[in-house]
Structures are given as structure tokens and as C-alpha cells.
Image 1 (cartoon, one colour):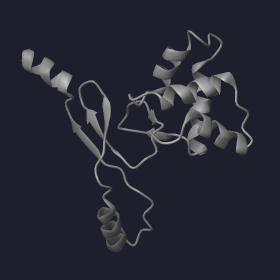
Image 2: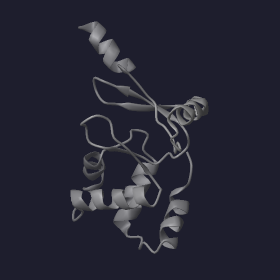
Image 3: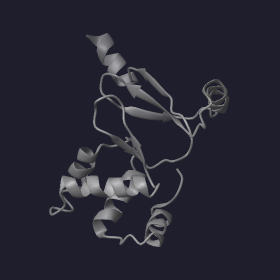
Length: 145
């Protein structure tokens, strides 16, 4: 995992963003989550500790963190955005049945970016790759039926 919660908070403070207990909790939850949660999942997990926090507060803070470059927003199809605090170069495998997203490491496909740039004249700023299928638990459930 990349930055610690403390490093991320320092980065935010340096841009003049006040650190509230809610922001700390949201960021901390994201940085310790391996599931790429949606805003609703974050809300459900944190609302017992922060009964006054609304879903709108979660969304607003997630936007703030995305704009500050602390987290990445993952949009896949029509589903709710998921959020990832791991900013390292990595790829995702996505279960079409339950929506689970799993990180996996693979050498960055920089040659694809070079080829795209040569062929299109684009100044390439990055790419993403997703692998789709069924996670192990959905596949074994499917086999059992």
C-alpha cells in the first residue's frame, strides 16, 4: 500500500483542507479496505460511529479526496463508483456475478500507451485494464447448482 493515513492527512492540510473526524474516518476506512468500497458501503460501515454523518457528506469528501489525488474513483458500467486508496500501478479483476474487485500486479503495459500514442497522436496520460469473470466463490457456487 502507498501512503499512510497520516501522510495523506498532511497532504490535505497542506492544501488548506481542515481535517475533521469524519474525513479522518473515511480516509482511514478506505486506506485499510481491500474491497474498493462504494460510498454507500462506507456510509453503512461508518454511520454507527458517526450517526450525524450523511451519505452526502461521504460523497463530498470522496470528491475532495479524488481531487486532492489521494484516492482513485473506479467507474465500471452503470454501477456505483468504487473508491481505491492504492494509487500504485495495478490492475483489477472484477467478478460479473457479485461485483467483487480484486487487485493484481502485472508489469505496467507501457508499450500499449506508446503504441496508442504513435497510432493516434494522443498525448497519453494513462490507461486502465480490467479482467472480467467470476470470482472463486461465485464460480464454486455456480458449479454446485
